Length: 214
Ligand code: DX5
Ligand code: ZN
Image (cartoon, rainbow, N blue to C red):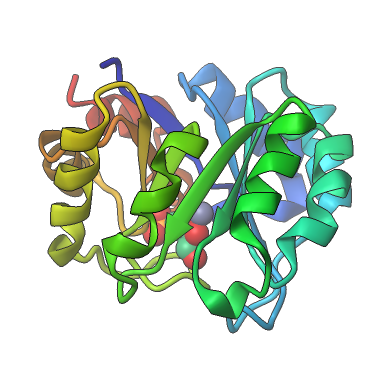
């Protein structure tokens, strides 16, 4: 499967967001990953639909929205309206929503539906939903902050998912750099989310090429 690179703008310089988006687009980014945090499901607050709408106006690349929030079902329509192309929600009970209903809501709105799980959440929780999603996101850090170390102990989840579905987009998020990207791809991932390793590098095109293994 071709490798898709999705820079996470959480690590971008927000004082010149437009320039950052144009630079990663020119550098070969495939999707733009938007990390939404509510200060409840995760211990940090990032940004909401209004910023997603601004990003939508800056690029025609697919916007991949990762909701680390409670009650995602309630907020899905706002992110659809803001221009999301895919919306990924969490499976943990702490996310306080009916996962099946939320996924249906996302798909009914014409978006691709993604489901994700934290490193400490067992894969069994995801398995019943595999045929109801377009993207499976495997978290390789505990969500909330950029710049954390990659957890190689999550590779079995990618392997298992790939063995169950050859066509599913399997995305990996957290601590992705050239080395951990290679390991993730070997274990079945085909979509790489990367914040720090792209936006904190000098040469975005080189960083993206290295993630792809070119
Ligand atoms: C984790 C977020 C990630 C994260 C990626 O809370 O979902 O998207 O910001 O950032 P890096 O690549 O810096 O680990
Ligand atoms: Zn993310």
